[in-house]
Length: 190
Image (cartoon, rainbow, N blue to C red; front, top):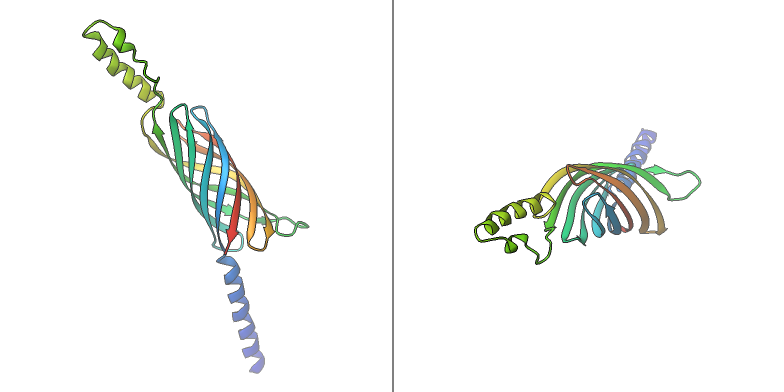
């Protein structure tokens, strides 16, 4: 009976240790670059990472892309990572990622102070202004928000007991706003 109790205690303690590893959390900041046919710009972002299991991690985050040609961009993401340990490289992990994104644009693609309608005879300028404004909006002006998905991969390496450095690349599949995003990050584990 004592042996059974000892085995049960060992199992309970081992499961508690495994749970502590599974529940590891981290916050990270990242710098990167996004490149799509509509927008190319540097970005800053933040992410919270939570290990559901030792290998499966969920990572919600937010990225802000600096304005380029009058258009700014932001994306809220929820990604899943499946972590693989690299044998022979203590702490080095690689992971594929899949997730969802909500991507939004800000600003407008205007042509500065130039308005062709100002140079037309009376009565025609207002009509041209309306057509011109519609064309600017279709060319990427105004604010838009779209859902999409992310597909990519990353790598992380611990440089201290509670700090990891990493690199991530992902493709964001978003109607009319597809882009590839590269980023480096530093994560604090707690």
